[in-house]
Length: 570
View 1 (cartoon, rainbow, N blue to C red):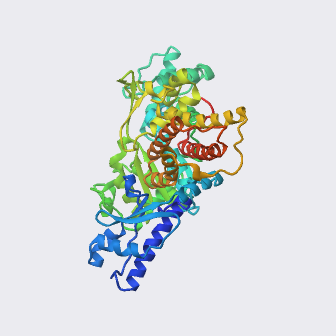
View 2: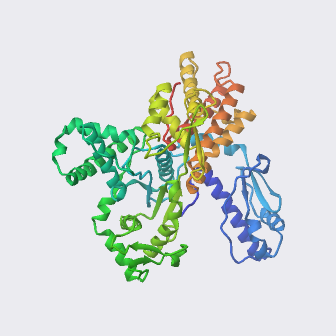
View 3: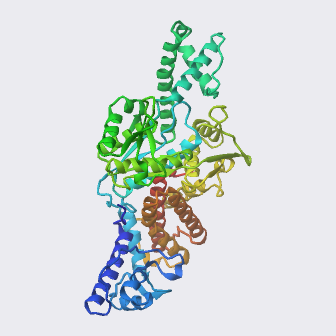
């Protein structure tokens, strides 16, 4: 599914890859190498700068087939690689890598490409295929907590990355508005409502103790007074299920929208259960002999597809297990034409992955059609101490509470930006310590401030040029950019399409966050060393203006992928 990008860097990457393949074909035609199959390979970026800009590992992959050492193969191949003005040199390194060193001409062309190409860093490799990203999918029996907020940040950025490489992306959240937790929620609201009106009623032993339950009951008391007491308990509980969930879902949508996350669709478990889709899924499994009866229950043959044991799908009392609506929901996704589905789940769902992957294969979908990412736990730290979270005890921190607390110090816009960045700083699979004290710092120690400040500083340069009457319009000569800091900055700009590509195939927005930190750091070093506006050297000024404008463009694009603003002043 995943392929490289087709912008300038990817073009040079693909061009060099094709040169290596052409060299191999010529060596085979002339009988120098005996190879019948050319394995696919990826042009790598060496870890060390002295090893070049791009590296081909193909010789190592051909050694067994060619019955020759990788280094010998590499030395043969480079003889067939033609000279190119974009290449400074080509050499064999290590056990048999072919290392390519790009020329200054490539760097200069890169700047022009970035400034003129609004889609720099993007590609069309997704070919417009439909892909769905399901994330958050929090139970509506409580507010959006910080783990779901982390999933919201990551899921939204993954969707942005997929869109950047040409996929038609659909964002979706699944509402678990059925099942036992909804009944518990209704009983909890009922108890608080009755207590507010002076009724003696015991709170459910397993009820939700959060302050939000009291706030919801208070709002219902304000809107309906004591009229709900005239209903029977069953009628009242049904009302609290319906109205309570409606209000909680509305609060989820408001909180996430304020956080910069908007979904194309909110799917409902209740709707799935009432749609006949579960019967369709169960019938498909039965018809294809992937289910069987045992001990008065119906079992799914999930071991046939790699699960560690078969799974009950219909219990002895006739009720379906919670797996069935999930399977039916995903079957519906396939009916809606999605070529691939990506789900982001919470840390307590890891063991659920094999059975769901097995079910998708049983339904006739490719083994990689469903990709599941686990979004790990968030530990909020305040003054170095962990903030405890428990939904039932009411000691958890909600997304809204987090943003409000941060906003008191830095304003809402920066609070949202900072939270989104911090949630994405580490790999999805890694636990995250969210330092609330650091998140509100408006200094270089705060990585998101450091990046945004780089963007604002560049915007300030343009403003200063105008105020000082320095003419910066007209053709710039990139060949004047000879300082080490300038070259380092240009090469880092050239890495951006790579960063987008690798972040997308790895479902890793944290790689974009790290790239932006590196780019900002290199820019600040350049700014401290190189004078950008020099009225006595207009040609050099124009060249450096071109360079910093390219930095501004890439910073803005990278921040946009992460759902973070790029302020022009700070």
